Structures are given as structure tokens and as C-alpha cells.
Image (cartoon, rainbow, N blue to C red; front, side, top):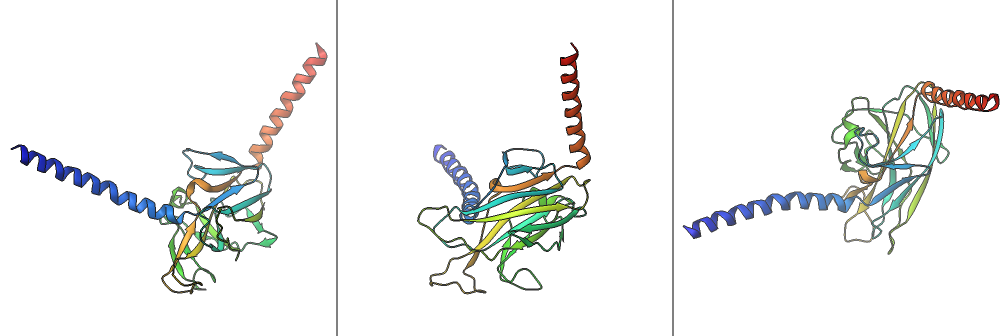
Length: 253
């Protein structure tokens, strides 16, 4: 009787170990590819938030119809080159975005419709179909791509992050967003990826199965928030009125 109970207990323990092990393998595999880190100048890190556009992101708050920020993408892993860094630029409001420039070059605003719960597909150069680069898989799904308002496009920099003994190689992207209308309430979300070579040879061969994607985990992506100008100006006007009344009261008492 005691042996029978021990057998059942052992079976349950093995089942628990198996259930625990499978997700750990999957998470370890994802962590292995999450080699990039993204940072933005003049940003505030936001952890948990019910808004998936800003949760676990470096958030840049802007009150202007023309917003500039410097984006740094780093090779955090450091022991392998990451090729052809790509910025995925997603937004909730394409109608009011007049232009986007990165390092002085205009970004093609050929928006892809969402939602795409699998995340955008990742390709080597020369890019997604019809150019038909090598398909690397989909960007792991996260909240914004489940939003029916989400649209996205790419900026393909062609820049590489070299391997180093000490992680930290980086690429700088100077980004400017111009709105054609002040009534936008725009959220602009940035992800990054590149590709790595996992073969035994010295150089990668495009099209073989030794290529894989390296991307920035969702704890290190970026969102730029540009509220409606009417809202921003109303707040500024209200603060100005309060300041005027306080000064007036001071000099009349």
C-alpha cells in the first residue's frame, strides 16, 4: 500500500517537473534571442500600466506637433554580430502623421494594417515581400499588436552591431516625428530587431537555416506620446491663468 502511494507521488512529481520544464525551455530560447536593448533620450521608464502601448517602455512625453528624440540600440548579448538593425514603428493614428525622419532620411509611411497578434514578421534585407528577404520568424506577440487601431512600418538602417567581449556596442538613431494636424493624440511605439548567424562557418550565407532573429525584449522598447494640442494647450493656459491670478493677488493685498 505504501509503495503504491509512493509510486503515485513520484508520478505526480515527474508530471509537475515536466510541466515546469517545458515553459522554462521556451523562455530560455526566447531570452537567448532577446539580445538588443533600446533607450530614448529624455524618457521616463514606465513599468506596469493598463495601457499596453506604454507598459514596460521608455516613454517620451511630447507637447509639440514636431518631436525629436535620440534612440540608442545596444548589443546587450555581445558575443556575436547582429546585422541590419531594423526599427519597427507602430502607431495608433496614421492619419495625422505627416512625416518621420531617422538620421535625416525620410521613413516610407507604407503602413501595414493590424491587428496582428503574432507580431510583425522579421526579414533580412532586402526586406519583406515583395522584396523577399530571408524570413526570420515573427516578432514575439505583445499588447499593441492586438489593438485594432495599430498600424506599423519599418525603417531598415543597414547598420550592424559588432560582437564584443564586453557587451555594449550601440547604434544611434536620431528620430523626428512631424504631425500634419494638432489634433492627433498619437502613440508611436518602437521595437528593434536584427539577425544573427548561428552556423559554424566564418561568414553568414543568406537564405540558409543558420540565420536567426535578435530583438529587443518588451522591457526595453520605446513609446512616444503626443497628446492632442487642444488638451496640451488647455493645460498650459490653465496654469498660466492660475499663475497670473496668484501674482495679481500678491500685489493687490
